[in-house]
Amino acid sequence: MMPLSNPNSPKRLADVRLPGHLSLSVALAVMLSACAQAPVTPPVAPKSPVVEASATGAPNTDEDIQAIIALMTAGKYQEAIEPIKKQIATHPEQAELYANLGIAYARVHRLGDAEGAFKAALERHLEHAELYNQLGIVYREMGRFDDAEQAYLNALRLDPKHANAELNLGILLELYFQSPERALPHFQAYEALRNKDEEVSKWIKDIERRRREGEL
Image (spheres, helix red, strand yellow):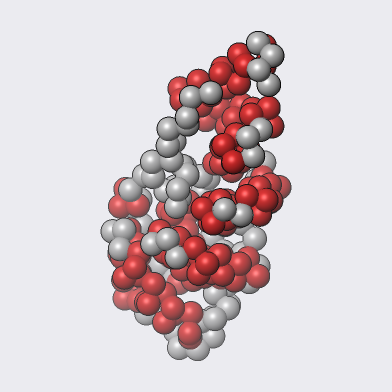
């Protein structure tokens, strides 16, 4: 099969319109949704729900929120890390902060830190499909392929129509597990959810051809 070209060109976060005067939990949940539309490596994911979280410590100001949003929408993930960590110091139970910290870490390839941040978000009851999808991406980049597979499956458990988790799982099975037949139904599910993707259609046809010709 021809090598898979990268299907994972992320959309620019700056394309996401964020309403003003958002509360902390709403603003950062929107940011998580925005980042879900441009994941660390793979493609476009479904919208995230707004998750309300309890706050401790000093209240966040609108300026704090907007500063973090501005940095992340501008792709300044390294610069966003310290402001997010500062907010975590005073609001340690707000899961959205950890989620966005994980995204920032992953974007600057601090994979161990990204894993820890995503797990912290999940432990704070932000069990969300896109977080598992992001965690799967991190595990794949770390070479932890069994963990990546489980993370994608967790994403699909929470959201059976999570197209990116289907695609990412298919890529993982095809390229890293060398199991195109296991990958095939995930590519097909992704294509069904996305209606048409010419590149993925080629992968599907190639696997089906190889199966017909007894190559698999």
